[in-house]
Image (cartoon, helix red, strand yellow):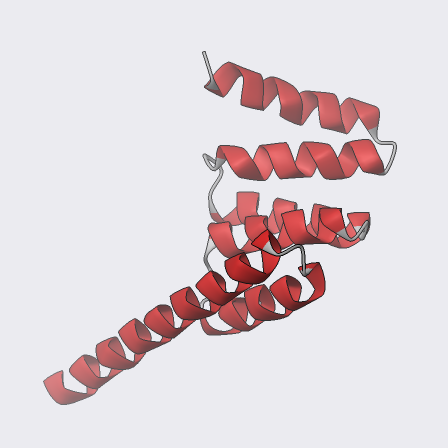
Length: 118
């Protein structure tokens, strides 16, 4: 039984490493303002590690840059579902809501961000 557990742990660690490599690739494309490829690689990273709030938040920002505000909002919300203390998630969700004209929702998240910086 220990072998199966060790094997499973190894596969999980490999998937996380691969996901991190994909995230780094996505970050490179993002810095080059190639947001479509950034989204593609963040998505691939999420397929390997779907419980990583940072990947969702990063993809949310890439969606914001491509003016896909609904997708940006969904990703920011998912990031917060995974990690309620992830401040960038609130900031991304606020920006998405602002772009969608949902000003009260945006203000609530901006207030959360503001309180975190005090």
